[in-house]
Length: 116
Image (cartoon, helix red, strand yellow):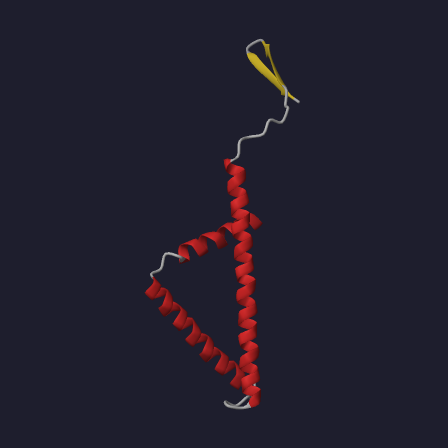
């Protein structure tokens, strides 16, 4: 299950790279604007009025929470890339000889193979 999560994160990050720089800037500006509107609404819902110390502190706390969330997501993506790299290395590596011994004997029209 964990590998599926890492794979989906890795693929989503790779696919998100398929955006032009202009489109990326527009998306980022839109995200910043949405965060600003949401932050304003959230702080005002707590009773903080614009230009007050409480409002300023609320907005700073929301910013710190967003940054912590972004750092966490970047860490998760980094771990996913590492896991994908390990999985790729394992898939490309030569199979290891396990020292398994097998014997096949014929019994009438049947073949019987035993491995140990």
